[in-house]
Length: 280
Image (cartoon, rainbow, N blue to C red; front, top):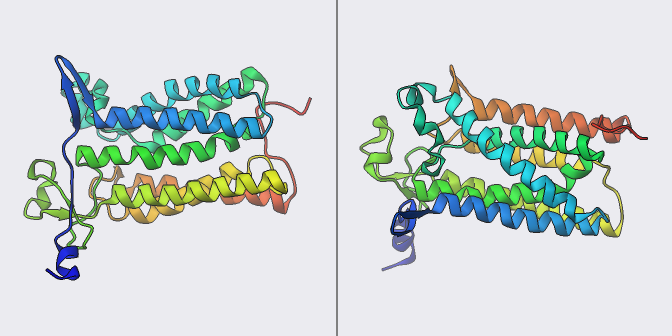
């Protein structure tokens, strides 16, 4: 069998959402990946804090704030745009292990939680945001694989060599006759990994020769992640919609504008970003 034939025969196939069962205990890939993302992100952000000579214990406390805010907000954001689906069975709102969370909801919840934390601890929000940004995007790269195991958040039908097989029960009604789809989870995971490498490289370079202004790393995260999300979202079959508008594309566009405006403020007008704490 020649190489082109082998490539055409390749496909991603999910082994299913459940990792293993032990009596009444069920361990799902989705929950495991979220836990891994939090643990790895926490460890990384503490390491970056030490390099910035920031008390790493602050990041431990911040992580608790972020988890308590981000996961419920990610779920509520998703549910809000799928309310007819949950209205008949409200208890399903709490079945987060089945999938159905939105990263933009998590980011919004995390930003609010971080702002409250920074205000209470009297530390710059932007300083914290810069320390968390590389961990955040790495966590997103890891978490996207939960969509793979749940057979969700995939793209339009395709016959590309890296096609993703989706079981019939998980396919949208209009695509029942198709077997293979774009693995948009993989596209976004790889994009996020690239953004992580960019942010970490800039962070480490800044340690040797300072050139970054406080808040710029988080602003670059907003621009870079949002740029990828816009084109990847265009491939998806399950976008959250507001009329004809894909919500994720709209929010991503706002993220890019926010990031660009912030960088112009920092480097063009040479002014500090507004913060939750004053200079005193």
